[in-house]
Image (cartoon, rainbow, N blue to C red):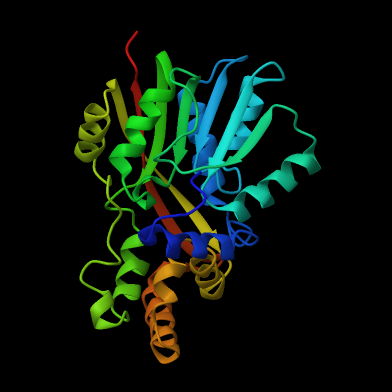
Length: 276
């Protein structure tokens, strides 16, 4: 990664560094679930070399490492040094020998052309300052015949339709204007077009939905504060933050059952091939 992040990226970098220790360590692990499903869908062959971009706490990294086996290799990159440190500690604890971790910008992958058999990216593409450049980098570092696979949130993901508006309603006026909006690449058409523009063909794009149960509204709020949406909560005044929390809790009431708050996430799985 370039040692100096761009100004547009510096604030986001600070957020992810601040939440690295608690990232997906509260509530149900939906990142891990969809990371495992991405790896399953990609049917990663043993003894291959995989790149996991925006590896975070390893939702894609660890299942991919199991697939490639001891003679394979998986490299995880992330722009957050804290994410890399936390995940490296987990790798050491588990004594996994086929994982390499590096701090790196998705738009400037510091690898030679045609290095990897697979490039994966789980629930991160819309965070990149230049997502199309990142996809072009995925294409460049893939070997001919290699495959890229990624996940993004569906524009109709039910739980995001609850908490995204609740956050938007309480942002300072100058910060609204679409600041909290459904992620880009949230339709099959957008994903197909973006992958095609990057040079891929043979696209496969499908959606999956999974229900996750939070013990309470408090637990779901903690997950919001331990994820990427924290960057919006941080923009609010203390009263606005409390109002946003109350607003969210009110709109979660229809999702409550005897066992907790049921939150359905709908995700796109997209893949493309680099032609031989």
